[in-house]
Amino acid sequence: MAQETQFVLSSFSFLIWGVLIMWMCAGFTMLESGSVRTKNASVICLKNVGLYAIAGLMFYLIGYNLMYTGVDDLIGSFRLSYGTSEAEKALLAGDGGSVAEVVGNGNSVMSDWFFQMVFVATTASIVSGTLAERVRLWSFFVFVAVLTGFIYPVIGAWTWGGGWLDQMGFQDFAGSTIVHSTGGWAALAGAMIVGARQGKYREDGSVKFTPPSNVPVVTLGVFILWMGWFAFNGGSQLALSGVVDAVAVSNILVNTNLAACGGFIAAIALSRPIFGRIDLMASLNGAIAGLVSITAGPDIVDHYWAIIIGAVGGVICSLGMKTLEQMRVDDVVGAVSAHLFAGIWGTLAVCIAAGGNLLVQIVGILAIGAFVFSASMLVWLAIKQIMGVRVTLDVERHGQDVAELGIEAYPEFVVLQDPDL
Image (cartoon, rainbow, N blue to C red; front, side):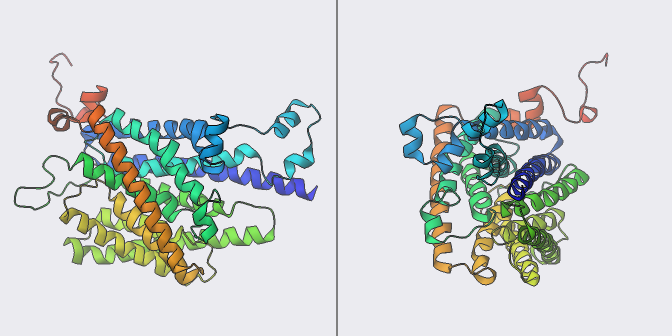
């Protein structure tokens, strides 16, 4: 009976954590739609719902098996689907299935699939914000399909799937590198191929400031992400079956919160020296960077390290945003700085506070970065040649909402052409 109770609690926790992580997609949607100009907000909403749907399908059809079975078994058996185990099916059908066999897995099979799938969607959301306002809708969707079906699962197979990096001792508790840096590398490759928005960089080299169109929505989006991160990190304990797990999850949630606080305070303190003003976006990204930074090792016991790791992440993010501006890499929401740069730092910080091996961590960062960036570049270049990646200048001027969807997110702001309306 005790084992069954542990099975129920662990399975239920996977499902609840997964739902909260799925809610992070709403946070990304609000952050991105509030950051872009109003003429592109509807497309942002559609992209974020679309990428979640694509991630779910691709991870079900291909990604999960590639991540946890391996490419040889996947191709050799033509196993392109994933579902409830035979033992669980027999139990549900009342055919005398073995409760002991089902319970022996520790949690229900599909609860694990669901929890892993929402991580994939988070990775894709990072790319969406960086390329906002100029990437073609269907080109973006094609890239998301490849990212969630192939690129991310390969990284997952190397690490959480028991592959070579896992065997070396690479530590990344909830995905500072596996999830966030992967999304950051893919976004950086896309930004380099797609190019900057028209008018973002003037002929004299100066940067045109593009303020967010809806500050309350951006801020609420960050709070939703902050909340979802508790599930992101807490659920990565991968069990809730006893006192040890309960204490560990409690520590993880506290460390996650402290790191975000440290990241925000550090970023807002540095925003005036770096940007010449108290920068709202840099400050909010500082909180996200703190969250990303602690994600590789939120299970540390000494809580003060979480504050330090988060604060350093906030500093790195702010400096990264300024550096990318100077390099003329247009990242609309600062996702590359918050997820890639802070993710690298967080993966290295495991060596300071959680006993990670520095050489192994560096090997993991370099291997994952090289694979994701090069694979993403190849995919973006292929999409560019086949169907194009960037909207036309006319579409960019008038906005993707009208040109691609025929609907404005804020129609009251539009000068109506029909005199009868």
